[in-house]
Length: 270
Image (cartoon, rainbow, N blue to C red):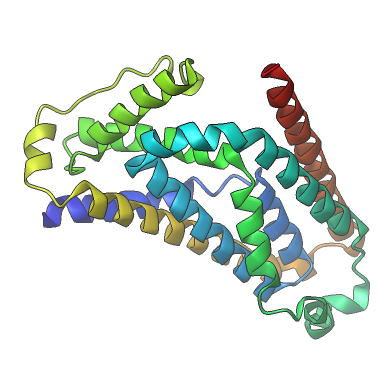
């Protein structure tokens, strides 16, 4: 029991930390741009809100995907459109930002814009909640990680088998194969069944993995925030403003792309 718990504990922490590193998603861009503005507390609250939703998504992906995805799938187009509108609003605020030279050494004036103790937290929740690709991203990455861990002899407590069943189920629900897994051959460890019988329940292990993913993600964004704030004064002020505007424009692009995906999904039903 202890072995499977420790394996899942560290696998979740590893996944949450390292899979959050690429600065390409909406919440990553928002945290990066806010850190470059010096908004430490706002970034941390946004990270916390996003990490909570990631924990929920990962738990559902591993433990309850089959029963919930069929319902979730129907509202994905609406979620995409609503989330995109919010994303465009956030992108517009980022692009409008202009940091002045004296503000680099006057962080209290920057933080005064974010006095609300729940603003960043709420934004992190909304951004990740309205991002269906995050759900599928954690689903596929967790499947690959748990399957690989089991194939090299680590005791995953049977979560690799549970994920394999979920892959089969979601493909039956959607009628399509998951493209990112098309060429992946599931490697079942011959000791998986034995390990499963000797491990904690799949509910406890799924929850442990999900919580550690959330913690790992929060740790990464916390360290990223501290690093960017510490070194932002070394950047030329024009370069700093330019970077923030580029991040905002990129966020605009993601928003319009998600609106297109949402509209396309709606019209494809007719």
